[in-house]
Image (tube, rainbow, N blue to C red; front, side):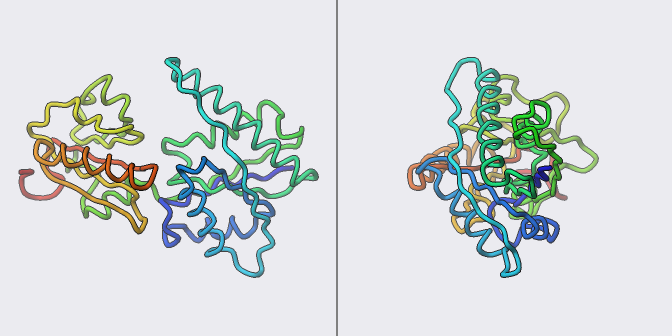
Amino acid sequence: MIHLSLIGIGTGNPDHVTLAGVRALREAELILLPRKGDAKSDLVDLRRLLCRHLLDEAAHSRVVEFDLPHREARTDYLGAVDDWHAAIADVWAEQMTRHLPEGGRVAMLIWGDPSLYDSSLRIAERLKSSGRDGDAALAVEVVPGITSLQVLTAEHRIPLNALAEPVQITTGRRLRERGWPGDAASVAVMLDAGGAFQSLAPEGLHIWWGAYLGMDKQCLIDGPLAEVGPAIVQRRAALRERHGWIMDVYLLARHPLLPGPIE
């Protein structure tokens, strides 16, 4: 039996990992850390830091790093993602079989929370349904974590939704393709390759943007979209050039999120 714990770790700040997450990490016999290439070495560095910070001397966890397969850049986006997930499932299975041939407890550190725009649960389901975990039974545990949206609203000191109004969470790709969603008063945007908000008419919109949330290099900008939108695009490009990667998220609103008008 393989017991797989998908542990939400927030956005890289050790203080954001819950007590339940720490317990699951310490109980694991094997902790798998994915490497995403030199350009995103900060991501595995942060996972290493979390392991050093949170594992105590009583823990006997073995930390193993592996190279994450690359996703092909194809016009068939969903098909490319499906193939990518299949390749990742194969790598997970190979690592579990190699290091825990008799079964045991495995932990994976998941950015944010496994439920929100993360594919770890889908990949784990592939292992359960396909038997690619070496024919061992697979039990999956999810340990919730702080999402980037929670850190964004905390750092800007705002609620996620306007009073009694709906909020929608979407991606940069969908925002470009479909525009402002339905009757949503607020829109949270994740997985934006850069500046999807430029596809919207900026009048009457306010934006709260954050990059590298919870990290030492955190950057925040907010204001009327018409005024700060260009600055966000420029700042984002400069940060990506400096660090080789970027992880950002933002919230857009038509109505005030706190008492008083949005300017």
